[in-house]
Length: 241
Image 1 (cartoon, rainbow, N blue to C red):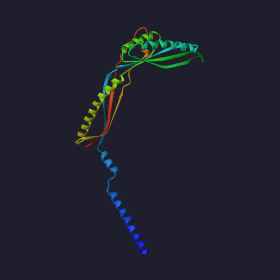
Image 2 (tube, helix red, strand yellow):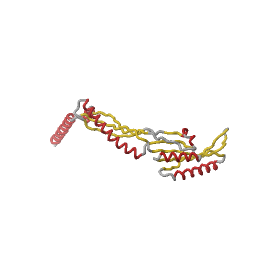
Image 3 (cartoon, rainbow, N blue to C red):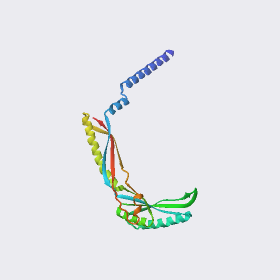
Image 4 (cartoon, rainbow, N blue to C red):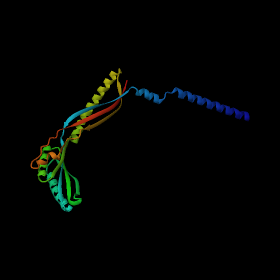
């Protein structure tokens, strides 16, 4: 019985030893994924291209406010509410202008460390693509006692999207052309795309502040929308062949 047990143990040991040797040989022969990745990464190039266009601003936003001061805050608030209600009603009568109420604030005005009076203020925002109509309305509201806080011009969202679609085609064409030049300069037969991302941004809209228009209360101010920059960027990585 003992001889048979001993033989079984010896056979088991031989089997385990053979399996360990086979595993070690396979591990040594197989290339590691890391080295393959590093080898591939040596032939990759990353770069960026962009396409830019100057576009006429076709959207304007004007901000006007009604202001009042009184020793009684309720009196100041009623004055502001009355004038702002009239201004909003008038603005809604003008076709093509979007009207939105802005912030409403009431705060004390101090003199000699004591509350001398209360100041109330409410803002209205007028948005439109009709700059001429906006100019006439702003002049009318200024004449009624509202204060122009500022005006900004930009490219309307629909216009910007259409221009960006055109610029994407332009930027992708530039990316392909540059990839071909890089491959040729490096003495390679071609290239393949590894990764690509597309982004867009634009310059901040030009601002025309109220200080330049305070003397225009009796007439419609002249607005000039100017231009904004629409930009599309393409970031990508290629692999040289």
